[in-house]
Amino acid sequence: MFDPISPHEKDISDLFIFVLILGGVVFSLVSGLLIYALITGRRRSRQQGLPPQVSGNTKLEFAWTAAPAALLIALFIPTVMVMNSSDPAKPANANAAADVVIIGHQWWWEYQYPKQGVITANELHLPVQPADNSNGLLIHLKSADVQHDFWVPALSRKIDIYPDKDNYLYFKPTTVTPQGQPLVGACAEYCGAQHAWMRINVIVQSQADFDSWIASQKVPQAKTTATNSAQGDPVRGEQVFLNNTCINCHAISGTTANSNIAPNLTHLGSRATLGTGIIENTPPNLKRWITDPNAIKPGLRMPGYSLSQQDLNDLVAYLEEQK
Ligand SMILES: [Cu+2]
Image (cartoon, rainbow, N blue to C red; front, top):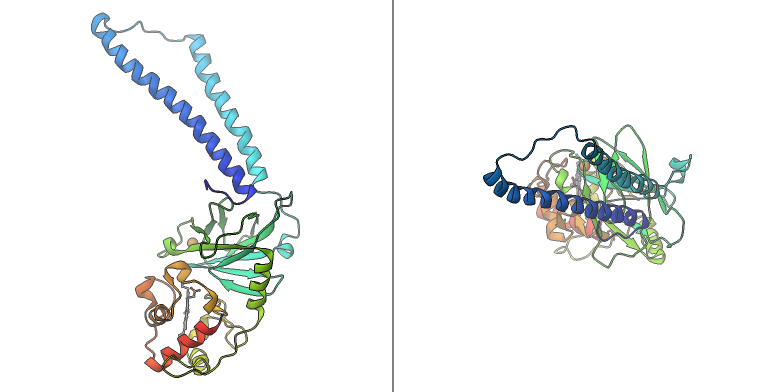
């Protein structure tokens, strides 16, 4: 949050630094006076006994009521201003106007782009926003199960996500993230066993890069081409996928698999990591994931599969080909 990439977060960050400095001044003053009193008072009390006892000193009483009140006002006014500037009012038709729908699941994130008809998981792609007065991208947040909290410190305020309530927020990233270095965040509301591994990865792209990412996500799926069987045969792999219970939970567009209770696997091959970032997305890791996901992310809601070596090779070849 000390390195904000949006005007909304910049306001929050500036306020935080202001409060930190103000708090630092008060802390230094109080602890400085305390230490001074301890040292000089101890010396004096050895010579003169207790100091004169006063109570009901109107000037003192007034001073230590007025000073904190003034401090609180100095904190309150900028806080209210930043609450407004960092979280602009939403339009009445926020549901229809939303650019991205974010759905929290135990323990992964679903990202829908309703305007473009794209659904993905675990990597949030956003187009960079112009540094003008616009509010940015309207985000609709909800939960599929328990309460979560979406927080990417460089991007925006924290926002709770509820199963029975819709929340809205504007994201306005004005800087592109470097290749391979997404903005990171995490679920900030304890939501069960893998709460700590409910990571958020945000990739901010130039409008052109974002458009071509959207275009690639919209093409149903790369045409599977049979390769030599040692590397796995994606055509057979698709059948392995469709013939197993994977389709009870996962969707891959262009196939009959359309369940959305687990991450959408269309274009899984284009994602850098698996399980919100717990391991890199490589063929050996994907094999480990399918065989025993619980060993990687204990408690997660996916069973392990003991497939034959050939089935596993083919399945992984198929999934990794979906770029
Ligand atoms: Cu969570």
